[in-house]
Amino acid sequence: MTRKDILLILRELPEDRRLQALAEAAEHLHPSDMAEELAALPHAVTLDLLKFLDAETAASLFCYFSEELQTELFHQMDSGDAARLLQHLPSDERADFYGLLDAQARRKLLPSLEKDIRDDMLRLAAFPEESTGSATTSEYISVLPETRVAAALKTVRAVARGSETIYIVYVLDKEKHLLGTVSLRELLLADDEATVESIMRRRPVSVPASWPCSRSTELIRRYDLLALPVMDEENRMMGIITVDDAMDIEKEQDASQLARFGGTATADDTDLDILHSPLSAMFKVRVFWLIFLTVFGVITSSFVAAQEEILSKVIVLAAFIAPIVDMGGNTGSQSATLVIRAMAVGDVQLRLSDIWRVLRRELPVACALGLTVAVLEGVLAWFSKGIGLDVLITVALSMFVCTAAGGVIGLLLPFLARRMGTDPATLSSPLITSIMDLFGVFIYFAFAYLFLADLLIQA
View 1: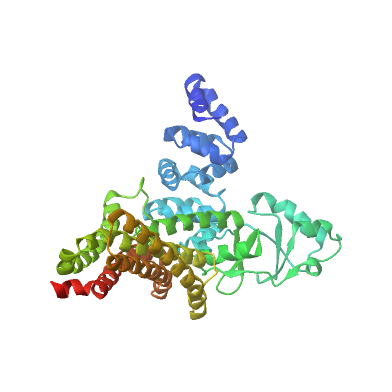
View 2 (view 1 turned 60 degrees about the horizontal axis):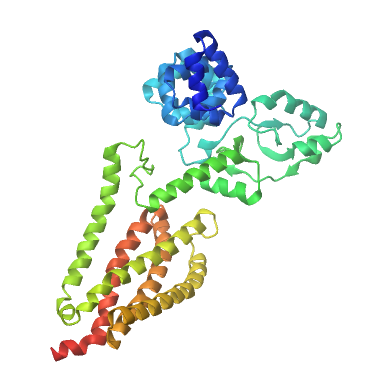
């Protein structure tokens, strides 16, 4: 069913049959597809549909709305409808939504929720946004170690509907300390009278709730887990982070890395959204880096202007300034991108051994790249501009050194940013551009004075 079909339902069917037709559509469509179609319709239609649907279907649909639409719909609901909807949301989604609300909306919501749901939501919402605790769901299946397999399967059947995943059963003691895990497959194949403790896998991988989400998703990927147990400050199991949540987190992190590498991260570490961020915020964030680059550009241009004497004697030198400094910036951006990716997937850490390991691999590649573009630049310059050998050597050597240096500087900047406690992607791209512009003209005119000094002496 498409948006056109939904509009046809709203236009052609009598009012008392519209909601029934939309409800039938919601049962047959994936909630993501249905939410996408409803997002373009008037809010009144969506609100009426959410009231008409059963609570579980409505909550499933609500999860796929954008954050902006969720808050707008919430403000148009009465407290009873809002509570009915939120009580059927997954616990992590409920906590995330609570974090979107202002103080007044929170005061409206909290009294209408059941105490255990309210306490769980407040506990999860208290964690910082980038922490594992903020992405944790408390809906998982657990049994005691002495539980028989038959009883454990009965527990799975009883609570499966409300659990985030049923494929892993967690074995906890009475204080909720994690002892082991049992897969649903292992339960089905085991003898009914066997205890869960006798078949469980001991020492499962787990993470503290205070860990960054990125470290937790890295473990899920590394160990091919469907879900990762999350522990509180007293090492008691408080929930799980599932593989689908990890995929969503990594998608957001990829978008953030891209935005930050372009110099568009805000002071509070959120990302700009071209459709939803305030215009003033978009201006402030972007103008900061442009002013920064402009200041660097003035310093660079002032240095170039100071080389008036040699430029007046060999005017063709001016034609090669831009390609030489640009090549250093481009190579540096390539190196920085590779290092940031390696950091993101956990291949390298902020330690001297990793820096040296990466440098040993990058240095020969950067030199080979520098040699390649230097030869190409020299050949093209020879045939297109007919320059002399001394100028040709100056241009080629400058291109080689700038390209190789750009690769090394681009490699080191992410480590420097991490050492300063800053996201490597935030600093790397703008700094590489600025540094290589300035460094490139230093290198270029140093070679120019070295190989063309006789022209100044003659003058």
